[in-house]
Image (cartoon, rainbow, N blue to C red; front, side, top):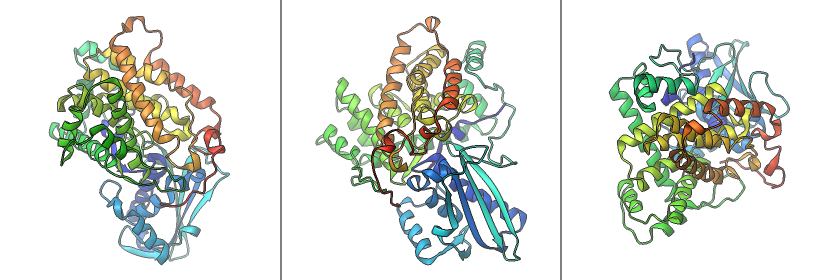
Length: 472
């Protein structure tokens, strides 16, 4: 069985897309590492990247070319200064050169050395890219990679970035196995997941990793709720989260993330107020994502706002605590793993049901766990959330992760909360559809879906809104 850690599903990185930005970025890093390992890095005199399929068709809007340049120049999505990304890209363009891995300058002209093959799709996956290094000796070295969703990258014929195959105490490929372990062991979902995580990390490392994710969620939401302006890319989308935050908090005073969250907790709990806050949280994250900000892939960047919005709902309006946050993330991560194994988390393979749908299913399960639901109710909530995202297309206007992507995160969050509420008031014994059944249905729907609705900007809304896509 493929072993996927919670920290494979949740990754800290840079927007706007896990498959079109994070994946190519990581592929560039892997290619240079491969060159170093083979001893040809010091012999590279020129480098070309060819993009295929969805990476070509929506690569400009998703910042694929920018991500490649950042990865080739030695920047890392976890640690880079996101505020300096535009300057870094401008410098490469103006100088027609790039500092490979931050150490070796070579001639690099983005307009010539990053090639978009709009009409060619490689056989393994729609998100394909090939690196070709021309060497001083006159020969060349070529490798092909696939960005398969959620920031996961596989190298052709090698599968370098596949999650490590590990001998887990509780190997899980289907939801029925997860529920069986919980019943047999008398444990909750997060406790089973925790025990699996100890194969990769110490208890202290798991706790630190979960805390880092929670802090990253907080920082992203907070920044998004306090940043105004127009999103880059040419659509002229005005950021809304900051205005909503001011409207909802009024004259409340705060000077930190913690005091801000305390102010939110005391801001009122009527239905409309809470609903507006959930939308505000989701908008904040995906406005940051669209601005090449730092987000948590959950399980993708395009769907990065759903889980933090529901997490904030739990923490601020359900009297949540740090222990509950850990349980939420562990539970949601395992559900994301089930969808990756049984279907896909790549919009280029399955449309937006693979992104917003999966994130909503993950969030619904996490919230139900925190609300005291049984294992059966946790899985039921996840199934309900996905059931009502089946067939959702990915049709980004201009290839940008903005319309309908940003608002779509608010809908996924609200559906997750609704699914959790329904599951908590239901008897799972009366359920007609299982989580395993809906995962299978999602995959079959993905296979049947017309390619133009799979992150190509060739169908749906993308056809009827003219836009000139510009760079960051």
